[in-house]
Image (cartoon, rainbow, N blue to C red; front, side, top):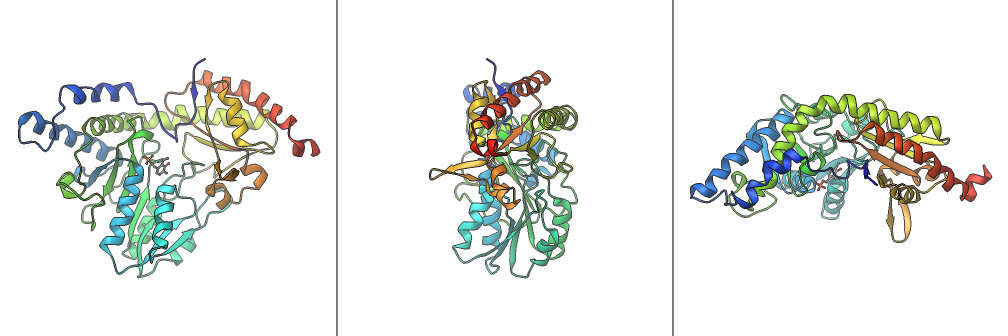
Length: 386
Ligand code: PLP
């Protein structure tokens, strides 16, 4: 049975073009880019070409791209750099629905003398912008707001927020790990100071990412060591992955149109099929302002984990909106922040598509899913009482 992979916000398959581009850098050109000899030194040029490709995907200058090991490192670097660069400022602003890569750094810093303001969202996952703007103070060191939510796909008006934050002279960072490669992004003339990207969400391998740092932004390195990355991140470069990441950015740029047409159509087909064939479902998040590949749906009176296990029998991969912590299934902090009712939050599933998905796969999911939900509901005491 073939795998039907609808979990692309978790990670993506590495594009074959990316693998081909990377392979020579394991066995043939394995030198250290910092070496004086040509064998190693020539690799520097390839890294710079990759940097240019990453920059082009987001409308940045190549000097504004810092290679990192992942989206998490990019997020950590951005926030810690701001705090180190402005040590007198002790206030951080972020949203209630950030990925743990931002959320947990903020929580950590709140135990280390920082005040953190979490901006709430409404039932559709939309940010309370007026509250955000009212919280900007002279003591605010950084505002970190994600571009697209990984669970619901809801997009935040980042350009507008960045502009307002910059008017107050405050640093603005956005975690764009889910947005890059799915929607067009052009940082030219934007107020964004720092932006995080992760390779493995856009068909590059795991273990490579980037942080955009606008020219002129005060910066303090997170990894202290050698002089790599112009002294902004110590550590020998992950050469093959960086080169693969560059290729993935080039491919993503060319596939943005397909994302907004083919992929979106498939996602909408799945959503329409679910709404038509399965009663008592709720689509989570602002459907008018969402990533083209993401669908977060709650099937009331069933457990997300049970749905995943049943789909797994047909090799259908997706994610659930709850995490098993200390033996109890806790709905995700994102769905909780949106006030999704308990019975719905527990039965939430995230489907996330990519350019590799095909219509037959969606048809197959729609053949199996109503049957799975019916079966699970028939076993639920709550469903019978309705
Ligand atoms: N930020 C968001 C919004 C994400 O979805 C993820 C990964 O799921 C990350 C950050 C972390 O990225 P990485 O897995 O590359 O560390």
